[in-house]
Length: 448
Image 1: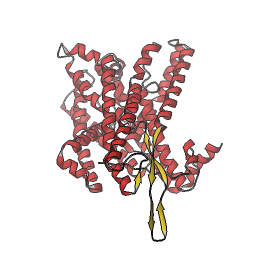
Image 2: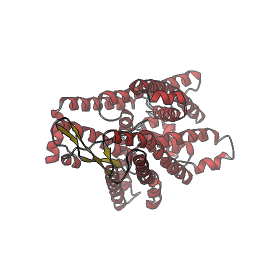
Image 3: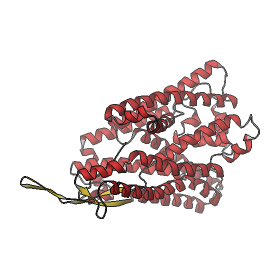
Image 4: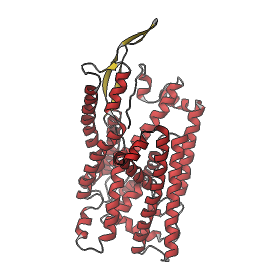
């Protein structure tokens, strides 16, 4: 009852209530767009193709369909979702670290970020054109066009490109006027939309005798356990104590307080998983086009099928790499140590300056390894459970560690943002940590 009462405090803050309803309104528009089909596609044949998860193309489409909320399976105008923008963002982040003038632009504050964001949109437009052209080629090769020809190809590509750019615009509106990161919330909505279908699929499988009621109970118990572990690990953090020396200015004494800097076990959040998926989709698309034409690629393509051994190994390695990569983007130990030194602070037992930066780098590497292994194991967990439980079908949503990680991670991010509004307006939070914020915690984040 107390938590429910605290939840209703959300509607007592006008700004928070406006952001919440704005986000929900954007998601309603997004879900409506997921039901507007592109003309000229044989949907029944597309469903049959996506049911063939043993093939590279069918497995790839089924996996991408999870993050698009079922729009790829229905071949709607939002079939590509936010994926082209995510791919473009990854490319721009890498270029910002290697191209000197982009690196300099990234250091110019708000102006530089606006310019880079504009370049990212242009790049997302190019990526969406390329992906929709590849999608059109695949659809045509599979005989899914009702009336093949250049007219349908152009309409098909334009529909997907316009739909993708509209989704990008919706995500930016959420980031500006709503709650949470826009792209993450869009992906979150697509994943959550698949959960009811997976529940019904499991119940129908029990009804028809494909799996036993005990197996269905084990599946849902595993989902609860995995989600609980994700919440526990996402909230876990290493607290580094910081002591501030006392300063006398006139008749007043400043400093002399103790605080700590929290380092999360998973500082990169869900971004490594999203990055890995975006990178893996490129070779899978290429293989799907060439496997039927080049003989020696057939065996390699079959081993790289979504859920296969080679796919899981590559995905595992990529997630670990992107965890360290993204952590290096958002944390700068040198700048963090410099900020603490300028504020008159120090870590007990560690010299200010270079030694403090080395200590932060040591902490990030150790914690980052634990976080990388944790999310990499979650990513390959569905395939392991599918084999161990001998399930006759894939539960792409509720049994997917990747989907649960993104869903729970984004939900926690939004809940934390709501929590901060409640505490700022002197209301009790509805999270467990909300009532324990008696001491003030200072956060330092060094960014490049």
